[in-house]
Image (cartoon, rainbow, N blue to C red; front, side, top):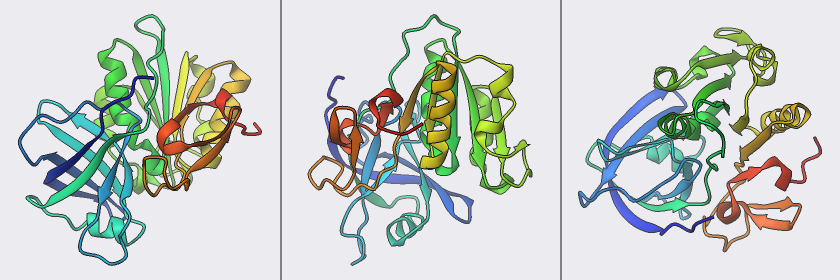
Length: 264
């Protein structure tokens, strides 16, 4: 896969939208006014969190969307610790430093235009699917989204997904869409997909991978291993593969399920 140039950039906050008590959406633009660098769906950024003794390490965040017309980078933040809490407090005009883009993204399928592709996201794992679905639609494919969460309140950016393609929902409590997990949704029995892409909790991704393997469908997963450096130096994010241990931050985070040693 072609290596993309990495950048250290100061970016300005355009907007900080609180989507949910545990989630916010940061919209950023280049602090210099230059165009944003090339990025592809599935890649991530490392955010430097200043002014806190507990946030020495950068925080890895998936690229949620890139709005080229507005020159904006969107980051969907789940607030789970001191670093992400500080990020949720950024205000328009604030400057933050990012390392980007990092990792390898999803692979464009060699399929005829109009092919139906299923993009499955669980919780904050739905974040990279927005950018990926938009790109696939632009390339002439038919992206279908399947989003899973605990409840209706935890389904994020639903309107944005619907603008791109058919969007199916499962919630554990049945408050929106079909009750249950993503692998229980009726669309898996009603439609045939040429490719499946997924990101979310590991048990969910393993269940999706098992379904894909049993159905003979090529599947890519975006792993969420804990990362510290983002460049393969710290070895925090090592994952076993059929070719040995690799750093998810440099060899992934996206892998074809055939590369992994998952018992599915």
